[in-house]
Amino acid sequence: MLLVMKIVETSLWVSGALLIALYCLALVWGESARQQGIAAFDEHKQQQATAARSSPLASIAAARLAHTLPASMTPALVPQSIGAHWSAPVTATDADVIAVLRIARIQLEVPVGANTTEPVLLRGAGLIAGTAAPGSVGNVSIAAHRDTFFRGLKDVVIGDLIELEMLDRSDSYRVAALSVVKPTDVYVLADTGEAALTLVTCYPFYFVGNAPQRFIVRAVANVVHPQPPRR
Image 1: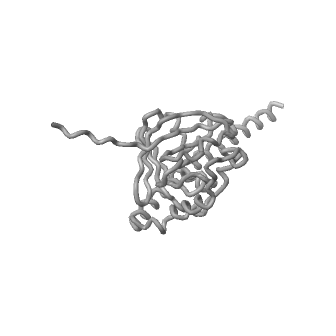
Image 2: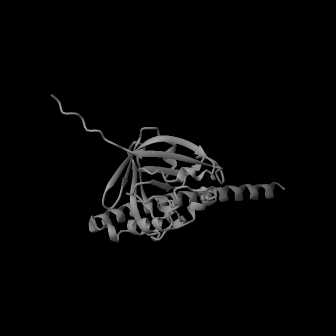
Image 3: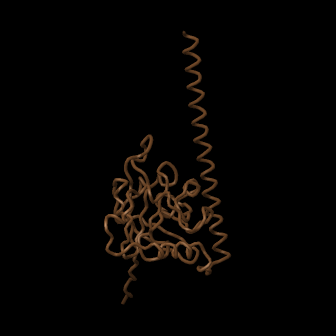
């Protein structure tokens, strides 16, 4: 009996060690993929600094315009959950990095993919289908996993600056609100009619299993008012 218990205990320790090793390998791979994604974006930006029409952004903007919801949206047109958005890709491929998201205060720098398929979210963040394309007026909504690239959102505070760098420009946003919602509260993804940025991740951050809520960071365009000339 003691021998059997010893074998079971050893097996559990070995299994635990293997799981930890696999998790560490996944983190290392994800960090490498993140860096490669940013490097690929920088190279593409150098090659096509002003070629907006041939960039993935043009395809995303066109796809969104083709599926724009009416201004007077009825409940029947609203997707049932944020999770439903996460599995709906747009026209650009998983390999496309359409922007780089930075929050300097929490040292976050992550590539943004054209959709939220798993290959994209393993490398960084992704644009939620049906929301505004980066660089356009509207609610640009971006998602990433809570246990990897968006873990740092737990430290974001109101007033933090967010930069969204694209191939032909960079937009600056300031965090205006933080909230926790249910997965079905897709109103947070609705078009705002003005430049806004919404970051979405699962919540609680350290929940074991499928987290039951969503953590939302809402940011608005950062308007810099010029200083009056000194007399």
